[in-house]
Amino acid sequence: MKIIRRHLNTLRNQMLFGSLLVMTLILGGVAIVTFKSVSTLLKINAEKNIQQTAVQANGRLEAILEQIDTLTTEAATSTYVQQVLQEEANGATISISEQQKIPPEINIVQLYGSGVEAVYLYSYQGRSLYPFYGERLQNAVRADWINEAMQKKGSLVWFGNDRQHPDSIVAIRLIKLIDQNFMPGGFLLVRINRSAFSFPPDDPNKMLLVGVDGNEIATNIPDIGHSTVAYLLHSSQKTIRLNNQTYMIVRQHSSITRWTLFILTPISEITDGISMLRSAILIPAGAGFILFIFLSLLLSTIITKPILKLIRTMRTSSRNGVLQEVAAESSTVELHELQSTYNEMVENINNLIRLVYEKEILQSRTELKALQAQINPHFLFNTLEAFYRLLVEKEQPELAEYVITMSGLFRYTISRNNKEEWVSLGEELEHAEKYLSIMKMRLGDRLSWDIEYPFGLASCKIPKLIIQPIVENAIVHGVENRIGPGKVFISASVSESGDLLIRVQDDGAGMDAETLARIKRAGGSGDVVSSKRTGMGISNVRRRLQLYYGKKHFASGVSITSRKGEGTTVQLKIPLE
Image (tube, rainbow, N blue to C red):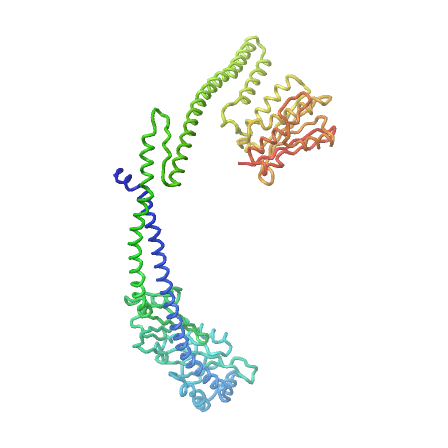
């Protein structure tokens, strides 16, 4: 398997397969784009024609509806209907003889309106005025239909199928009393036979008319299910699969009735010419692909044959671990350049081999010196340990305690492990307290200190040896320069922005404004230390924090405040992680 894979993974085969892939993508892409463009153009033109058909069909439907709207308006505004409804609105009950005069006024709707089955007149309270002994309006139609007719304020409102007459469509108009400032006076209800909206059954275009309630009003699609109607209403797709055939969907919404007309046209009728277009694209593409295979094979052979010769020469050029140069002979400029470059690479590699060998020897010597240098800290710790035991034996507990504190101080400071560059806040403060203890042995009662911080901050990670240099400056520049006892106060807290704030404060001599400005101007240019050259200095701490947290982020991470005779406060702001 590996041999077969290696044989196939040659430059010649890669060039051949790559060229074929590119050509296939180009020809296939052009063919697909052309095919889709023409198909889309055909579909767009067909969709426009179908949309025009839908507009015309919807116009015919709206013409019928507008005719009924005009007739019902005439009936609602007739003088006698207005008089009867006004009497009802005033609380009077009209007689039978008065009711018998109503039919000639409203039957014009049924007489001249296409497909109108019946017309009903109701008072505003819902009593049936025509027919004479009909049921109340609230029992005849749904309550929400009545409310919507009232909200339309006199416009004819079309609804879907009547629940009592499945073959009828209901329309309701609120009648307003003209002589009483157009106040509501009654309702006019019209039932229209669904056959008035029927479509030709032999039409190749399938049509569906759906009401506002989502129910079918008219269609020439046999056995259409409710799920199909719901899909057409709520889907934005332009095609649908129905009865093993794909149809294009065109929708037309009526502004008068809020009904939706769907026209489904078979895709096969739209794309009759696409099969011929497909053949016209595939035949030339196939001939071009075969010709391209032959040319790619010929070109890849011409290119790779000289390279194979160079490879065989390179395989025999290595002897005794040193690369050998090859003769730069070739009839083509590119291959001649390749051979010359190879010879330069061989010379550079041989030089690098010698350089790496010399560096390995130098590194071995350096590691040996580093191992020898590790003896010095161990010797120091062992000496301090022996000194501690000697003081214990001599019954000098106070000096022994200072020795063990100094040993811990050195162990904390001397570290060769990069993992120990980060310590907890508690460890750093403990180290600072050990340093204060040692300094107290020299200063005695002149030095006192206080360390305060929340217990929850003890585990926060901070860079090692960040606080001790600030404490050292507080003692050297503050307490030592003060006449009488001095105190160092160390605290840690969390700022409102979520940063860790560490303050080192002393009550020493302080600094005047000029000295404080000089220290702030020093920035990262160098340490600001005492005349005794002790401590690492504030600028050193600032540079270290900028290295850890970024110069842009930690530009103001160290702040100093001081007044002559009132002491100095140094604050470190460290992001909590």
